[in-house]
Image (cartoon, rainbow, N blue to C red; front, side, top):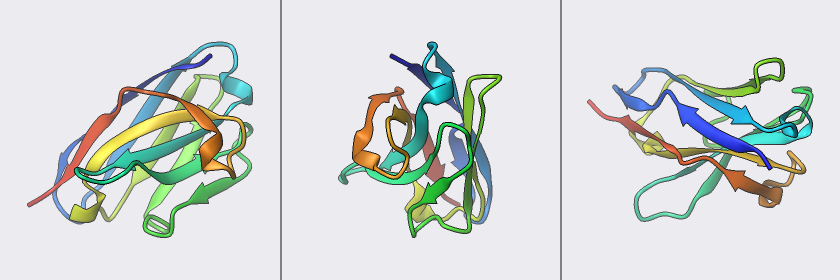
Length: 121
């Protein structure tokens, strides 16, 4: 089991950037797929981006493609989400997650506590 702690959220103006980090503990991190999901007020949690265990393949929701970049550092047990060109529709609680298959968001079953991202002028 992987324990996950997110950081890096906050308030940013439209067009701005944020970098989220997720620190993981547990021996299974290096061979786990990792990902980011988000939940806006009144909406269901949705897929944002996932990455394979070796960082070789990444997946993105259409709504963030070209603006967000996921990466990982297995030596530091950390996964990142670089978010650029943020807009108010990106406002949500962002959750880090680990799972079995990066291409299958429903395979993600371990979750962090979430970090709030608010995009507003």
